[in-house]
Image (cartoon, rainbow, N blue to C red; front, side, top):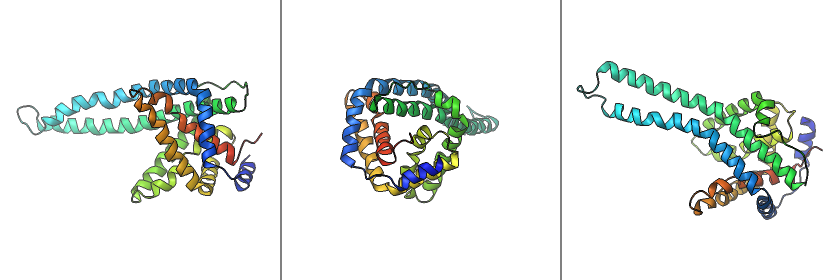
Length: 246
């Protein structure tokens, strides 16, 4: 499979910027209900994480505001508050790693829905978390790799983040449409494909993100529907460049 994918990347087709955006818009009209459902499921998954992150802020805010005030807090309490704060930060990082595979699974299922709708296939997907059940280890490692690569790029004076953001967007479609690949093979293939079409894909990411954010004009709630437009663009980029093995 890896040899086949590498050959398809090397022999990949020329792609048309405007054609991808146009086809993505047409497919979005067919899949907007599925896009809405996937976005809502993602939101429901994130809600517990948001509560864990933001609810303690109110408590910490009041406690930190009184730090140093002998009438409100002793030095021992100040130390305990600092320890609680760092533990809370640690929990946030841990949950960030843990929740990422769930979000990736939902988006991955949407990519499969896009393929089925685009090719008029009646192939049932494995559900929102089907990809997670089959490849939790791979998805967790890819999440770690994504965050690690992004952090390294940020540490290198931020500019490299513009380079790595392109191949990072390809991790998921490469996994979804080539499930037998290992994590290292997925990363290598993504960077190889991303390097070949870096400027084209960078432009598609920027434009599709702007178009996806237009939903905020519909009283804000419309962005829940349009947010998944960018993934349709990624789907068509993958399809038009390397296609599918079958």
